[in-house]
Length: 246
Image 1 (tube, rainbow, N blue to C red):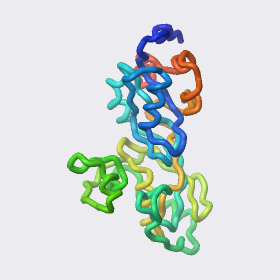
Image 2: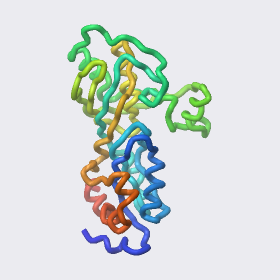
Image 3: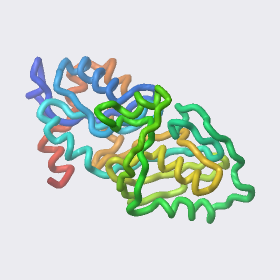
Image 4: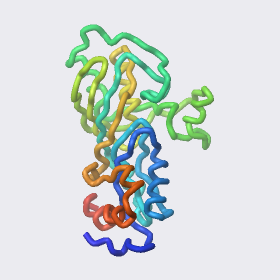
């Protein structure tokens, strides 16, 4: 596909798929994209925690107008939960708050039953370490001060789940879920159901709506590739519409 209208100093419009590296925020990726493409109007669709890797949809120029539409689509993740240890952030970046033995003789049917309780429509209590705001202040800022405030449970949906490997105390899984779903809360809640607690050890987003990692650029490419090369990776708005079936 020819994208000559992006050449030179033209402001790019469309979607760039990025494979986020661990240890950085989604806002870091936006900042790197701004520098790499020398453009100001950049946003992202669906925050990935620093621990997480994988697909981050970056919107450029007029693409920012469909940001909410893209954020609303279902997402797929693969991850690993560690049973027996609960953390204050519900993932491996947090501090351990409780350690319990994994139930003796825990088998696949019992694990299947725990996962099955979190299928379809369900309510999740957002974690304190999150970007949700209370009176205009992100919860994670309150959490850093040791504060815990009341949060409203949110209705979310799990479309599909799969236990990919059981290597106790670790469990590898795949989940397809709705917007607003916290995978670390999912791991935490499954651990609570099993009676031993759990936290999310690793996470990778593999799909968002119709977009997959297949066409994603790495953060290293974003930092080092020539601007012209990156411009060729941008998915135009007409193609985005076709991919979405809009």
